[in-house]
Amino acid sequence: MSTAAEQLITEVDFVGIHTRDMARAVEFYGNTLGLRRSVHNPERGFAEFETGNLTLSIFNAEMVGIEHHELRTPLAFRVDDVAATRATLEGRGVVFVGETIDSGVCHIAIFQDPDGNGMMLHRRYAPRVTES
Image (tube, rainbow, N blue to C red; front, side):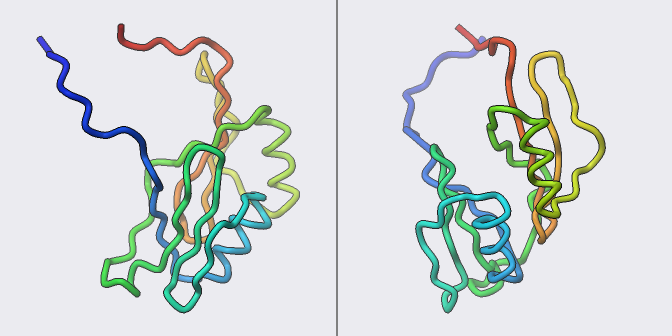
């Protein structure tokens, strides 16, 4: 039996995403995905992009002494229409992995950024079931 613990964490401020090529990443997140860039510090190897509810901190891990790793579990971007957004991104050169998935509660289309980080377009169309 699980008991509720005091909630210590109130929000997630950002998620870090590794890149080896900052200029290419800035182009992808800013122009291809159309996210607003809020910070850009190329000499220190990082840039930040806003999604509306979460900041993406794109950085060159090796510049701060961390080994470069790709995100293997796709980061889910909420969109209004997966098919339409997928078509737009394909027109901008994004290559998707397989067909769009209908899980029974949401639509999902998986792709990668230029560094191989997992990404997905996501749209829930059925109610989310949560613990009470």
